[in-house]
Length: 295
Ligand code: A3P
Image (cartoon, rainbow, N blue to C red; front, side, top):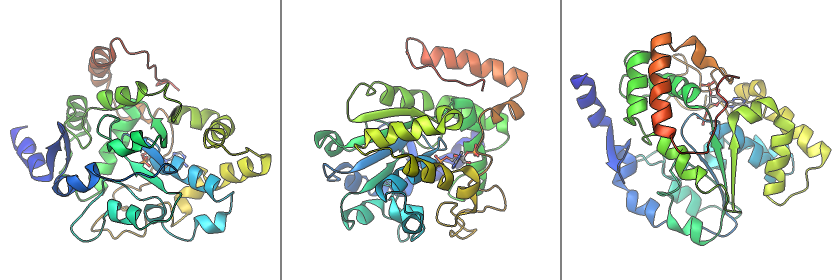
């Protein structure tokens, strides 16, 4: 336990109290002082909550359902990842600065850490929330396949860290609550991964209308088709297969892994589930946010 903690320290530092990749933190001033534009749209999530899925849906909306335009470049160039920074390869802030408007911005930051200018400019923001147990499962596989993470240990060990907020972006509970508090802000749309799985048409229409566009039947049909799990899994511009194994080893686990709800049932033991439920109740006490985890 102690040795895994010290190993984690080699990979993660802390920013505003949340654990984050050291390279991201090194250039934090660039993130904090980021200048938003009023027509930016932000896609915010806790990691592994359906970011890529909703990103592609929104990109399709912006391109009026033109699939070819969506395939012109990989998703992390079309929709830069704001706080992502490595010495040489990735610089979300730089990508965004050089990008013509309207920009679509991906972030995993909690609402209270999001650069102030997004709030000052009344940018539209879509927050995607996924149930904690499926997030923990998906994050566990992500830890194994993305080389910038320490060994997550057994699933049980990883879940302990997840509950404790000792993973990048910290406590899932605090993260979702930070955005839930913003749900009545007219510039924020709070949606659920589970609803996307259950009623994709309804949810896509909701997003289109939130972005001030017309949900024609043709556009909605095209979006549903192009952003299905299978389509996105087979699409090199969305499945991250362009990245080398040294960064993301998809032989260990694919980025587009299962794309279902309830996979936690295949991973949590009865005892771990009971422990998680008790902790969950404590963490979410007093919150009106209710997640559908039994689907
Ligand atoms: P699983 O690991 O449970 O399969 P993010 O993009 O935030 O990193 O989230 C990744 C998760 O979203 C993965 O979950 C991935 O399979 C799932 N996902 C991505 N695209 C999807 C889609 N079109 N439909 C359903 N799930 C999708």
